[in-house]
Structures are given as structure tokens and as C-alpha cells.
Length: 228
Length: 222
Image (cartoon, rainbow over all chains, first blue to last red; front, side, top):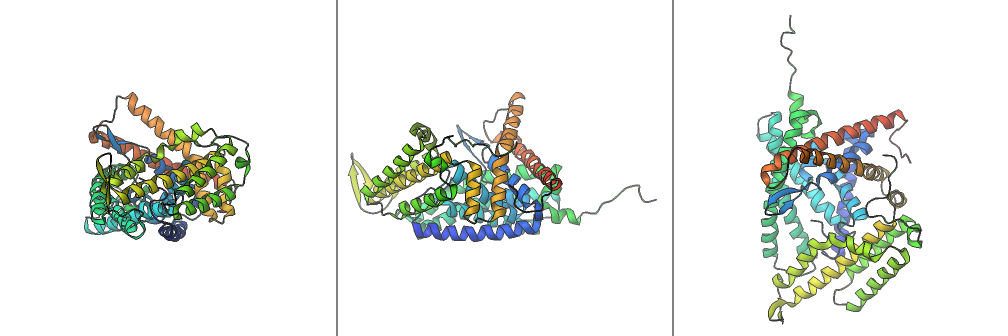
């Protein structure tokens, strides 16, 4: 859910806006280094993919459904820099063309659902990948761990921002419990979908999965019967 | 495919507000909303003035109010949150119709509702009166990095192409007797996500090659 206008006070909104701008600047540089002149079309299409993916409803049962946030998924698929860049662009377009998420809360939304989920998702993915065996089949579980924790951490970051610039005095303990509780459940869904989606891509096109590249690089091509 | 055309929220028109340069509207929106957010929520008459300003702009824009009202559903989730606030917020309590509610919560809910609603209305008005192409040009004039504007341009340009692709996949699933009811169907949906990624990424590569063959060198092309 996008943070609307007026949820956090003006100074906090401006500060998160500045943090988001710095984050986007870093992501732009990193993405350019990785993609070179392919940056604009590829990041554009991946951003479109993230936007479209958020429209797919995953039924939970009893008539309710949720959708993917995609922070950890994007980070594992296209790398943390390009991933963050794509998510940020999605939030800007959603805000300006679809009135989804307030314009003064744009920085907050990019910070929470972009920077936090991508950084946490990617960091946990790398840590898990270091522990697990170096196989392509281990990329999806590592991505799932990243997705699982990225969502509750983002909700905790929201509680932190609310403590600084919240507009209504709710008991912070209660807010933290409710937010983290709900988002742990959402995180489980996010982890499952990320696991299934990354797994399906790694099965057919592992070369497209950024997080699988170190594993693929270690593979050696063995031609049986070729040595004669 | 071609150039970006009017998006779903755009309302075609030739009013003064439609013709105003996009960068002016963008700056006005940010300044207006920062002012709204910074206004103490106890200043009730001031919010009336803000609403009058927006209402006047809507009138000038010739966008039917019903058109905007229908699209205000995006604010439903946080309306629910605002309605819960009076019950959970701390501080002195007051009785409304025999129910004990928090005074801070009531004031806070009012603040959230009025500021959020003004924000959605103002953003909708921008989206309704500005074409995507003009919006991108406006962002460029405001010195948003050109690469970022290019990425947004590609996203907007291919939005309908990719969502149509998603819709065709949906129809293909339905025609094979698939219906998503609970998490048991997630593997199929997640595979659709996977396929959509591969198709989008490959489309990006094809677009890049097409651009190269037309002399693209990483610079702005418009």
C-alpha cells in the first residue's frame, strides 16, 4: 500500500525525498555501469514488467487477494542498482499518472518500498547464496529468503519514520506489532511467489537472472565424446 | 506501438489548465501539497480554502467532477486506516454516540482524510489534464536526469503493450480451464510472472537493437 499525502509531516516528507533522490542517483550510476547504453530500453521494460506484475492478483482465499511488491524479485532478476531504478520509476509514474501515492509521500514510498526492500532483499540474497551450495537451483530459495524479510523490515522502517514524523500519536509499540505482524504474513506470500517466479525463470533462462550469474560463471562446459 | 498516447486517467481537453506547461503544473502540485501537509490540521477554514482552489481548477479544466470522483477509489485503503484511528489512538477520550473514541485519533483521522483527499484530487487533476509526453518534457525542464526521463518514457510507451501481453496470458489460462481461487494456483500465476519477465527483458533487448540500427548513441532522442 502506498503512503498518501499527510501521513507524515512536511519535514519528514522532504527529508525522505532527499534520501530517495540520493538513492536514485546511486542506482542510475550503478545501472549505467552494468547496462551501458542498454540502460534506457531495458530498465524501461523491466519497470513496465514490475508495474504489470503488481496487477496480478494472487488469491489468498475467502475472497481476498494480494499482489507482489517485487523489490527482492527485481533485485535478484536485474541486480540491485537496476532493480532500484526500475522500482523508483514505477513509483514516480504511479504517483504522477495514476494518482497512486501522494506526491509529497513519493520520497517515503521510494525509500520504504524501493530502497529498503531492494537493499534488504539483495543483502539477504547474497548472504544466503554464500551459505547455500553454489547451484542454479539454489538461486530461487535464496531469493525467497530475501523477499521474506524485506517486507517486514520495510514495515518496521515505516514505523521508524512514523515515530519521527507521524501525524497522530498512536502507541508505537502497538503500531509496530500490527505493522510487522501483518507484513510478516505478506512477506510469506511475497517469498513464495518470488521463489516460484525466480525458479521458473532460472529453469529456462538462467542467463537472464542477475543473481545466478556468479553461479553460472563457475560452470564449465563439458562436451562428452568430443575429446578424441 | 508508436508514440505514447493518452493514458487511462487522461481526459482530453483544450482548457487553460490543459495548455499550461507541464513543469509549471508539477511545481504547483508539489508546492500546493507541501503547503497542505504543513498546515496544522486544526485550521479547519484553511482546508476549505484549499478545497475551493481545487474546485475552481476543476471547473476551469472542464474535467467532469464525476470523472474525478470515480477515480478517487485509490484512496479507499487509507480511508479504512483513518476510520480505525479514533479507536486505537492514545490521549484523552470522548464519547460519540455512546462509543469511547480518542480525541487525538478523531483529529488525526480528520487530518489524514482531508490531506489525503486533497492530495488524490490534486494528483488526479494533474494526470487528467497532462499528456504523458508533456509530463516527460516537463520533468526534463525541471532538470530531472535525462536518463531517468528516458526510462520513464519507455515505461509509459510500453505500458499498454506489456499489460496487453499479461491480459492475453490471462485469457490463455482461462481458456484452458484455469481459475485462481487459493494459493494452490500460485505456481501457475508465478510462472506467468516468469514468462512476462523473460518476454519484457527480451523486448527490451530488441528495442535496444532497433534503436542502435537507427543511430542511437545513448543520448536523448525525441
